Image 1 (cartoon, rainbow, N blue to C red):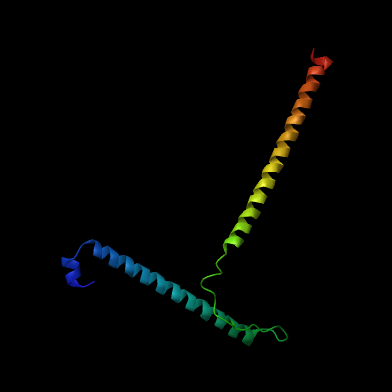
Image 2 (tube, helix red, strand yellow):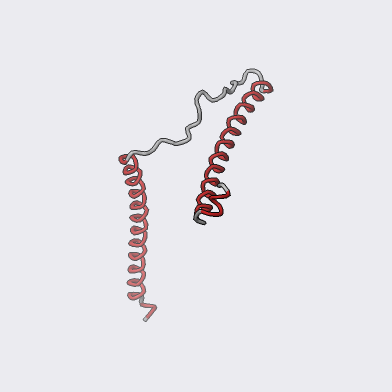
Length: 121
């Protein structure tokens, strides 16, 4: 932001510059983190190959770059995932309903037994 923009333009322009700088810093941070990950992998391969036991499988460096943006799911894949989750919820709900039904039957049987119990009279 130039001095003229700072002193003579709208005050919200400074906020836009700060947000733009934050986005640039975040992108740089992500890039440096990824570079560190590649360096770590390369160094671990070198050290493992240099000091690893003989006869063990030697690790290799990545054959292709890491995928930054994972595969986006198609609507059919999303729908299938939701159907599986809903089926799991339905099964869990049905199981609780069966437990409740069993408990209510047990309570009815118990109440009938206590009503017919000659010792309770």
